[in-house]
Length: 186
Image (cartoon, rainbow, N blue to C red; front, side, top):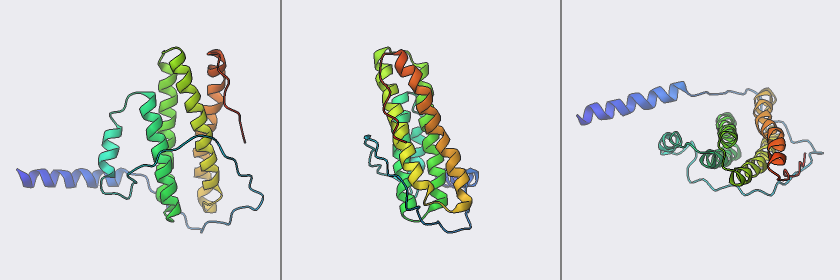
């Protein structure tokens, strides 16, 4: 029985590894433009304990699947954004792009779930926080864009569209609930 269990785990891990998306950019990152406007959004990001390089990341990904509310999705989006930034800082550009994509998918799920939940004012505060988080995500992804090789920038620009759309979609919802949307710094 233990041999069967170990072989099943090995098969499961190899299946998940083969199903993951991988990028391979051939060019080196280009230098950052000198006229880049640095934007600071006042939103705190968590300090995740795990990154995709950790052998325990698989368990984190499995636990993330059990999240069902907008707050949990937002926390996952923020944690993955920081994990992707850590990987980018270590020079693992291709792997970080995949993590950024997953972070923005969680941000989208958070936004969609918050819209579908009807908790009155509590929902409005959560929607405001998601809107603010989308601005922070965009801030970080724009800094990633200038550090990405030329042949990978199209992927990052595609990822950048998600937080932009979330912010733009949240404005009418926030106004409808009597809240002012966060200031657009870009």
